[in-house]
Image (cartoon, rainbow, N blue to C red; front, side):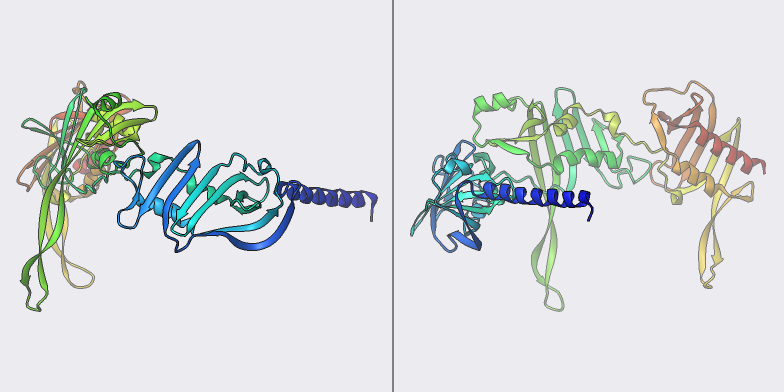
Length: 477
């Protein structure tokens, strides 16, 4: 073997020996270590715990258990205690397992046990127990633990997690209802009042795709469905970030900005349940009726505090942090951000004919339904478009129009340049029996789009020119 290779192997062996020595020192500085398989150092499974206390992060918490009343927080009888969380902590003491024992310990500071990360005391009907959790080992991912018997044990480092809680982690937070079937959503703030209503098949828009509207007196403004659902989802899908006060008085509410909220959000919704009618069907099975019940949820939003904002359910003494972006959406929303960005949302089945105006000429396109025999021999209907009695491929034009996407908002603008092309759709509907779509020159990249006389969006000029050329080809063919 070459000398270089021999030297490399010697160095490697030295590193391994040093690492092993260092690990041994980390596990048991100046003490004897007894290597054991896993074993229990504290077992309270089945024990009747009467009191559970621990100190963590400079805060000492004590909870008492009574078989008749369950868990309580004796320091404040009004504290809304989350017993489920406390039960999980108690369960962590069912069996505390160690993997090694360090005997003959004289200096607990070597293990972080002179000032432990957590000091736990448990009282049961059969006796009292203590558990102190110290430092994490430098190697191995374990923690030093003492149970007061003169030895130090190595346990799983996750043991500390069971006691890494502060008092407000134990608050039983108020439940935010599952608001699914909304009927109205209102926001009152200093900036503006906004009332949104959900109406299916309302006839308030030219397309039944639109179900959300802003109500302004007698007027209804059509809103984009997905954008509005996302906006109201800030509240219907809301989750508390943290409880900050479970018994806020008037002075505290003023401090949180909840005496005069920055925004008040009201959600009206319906819950549907099935109730037994008391009747049975012919098989003797109960007949159920659908019961719809109206509910209202009101959220008040107060001051900002960094990345959070104070909020409460109206009338409640409990105050929470919510994400500041939720408050931003409620207080500073621009209505323009909820307006539809669809160029044309039109159901082709409702269209019976179309008048196309191009270069000062108007062309009338008719739709008919013809019955044909399919490959399977069964009759079926197909749509036929004709211009002056000649069949044309207008379906491709209609598809191009409904596929157009907006390139930006032109809200508040009025057409100032010449009209590129206009479509007047005649429909077989009860409302909006005609729909007018017009494109106007704007600049080299965009056309201003007008729907039913309202110019609000931009479309790509390249896409519009493509549609114009396609129509030209149809009428000149």
